[in-house]
Length: 107
Image (tube, rainbow, N blue to C red):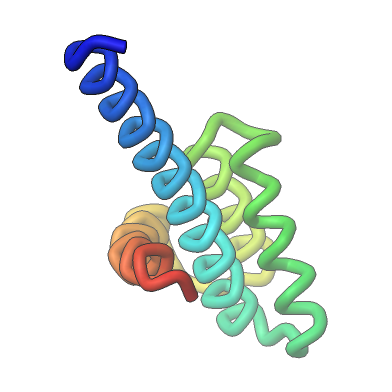
């Protein structure tokens, strides 16, 4: 194996690791967002955990972040909770920073 091949393999491994961490961080962010929204909805702890799993799944059922935002915003509106889509997106950004730190820390 040449030096170039080893270097290329190293870049591929780093890329795969970075993508895995992005995926984990997004899933963690969505769970945290679900728990935040569940609190706003007044759900019990068990119901909040179930709801958080539904929010995580919404990314795969919808169109990525738009699916998550749509689910949370729709659920909040259905219960007359006055939180806008923009506020949900700001919260998502805040939680992404937290999720990245948690994933990097391995928690």
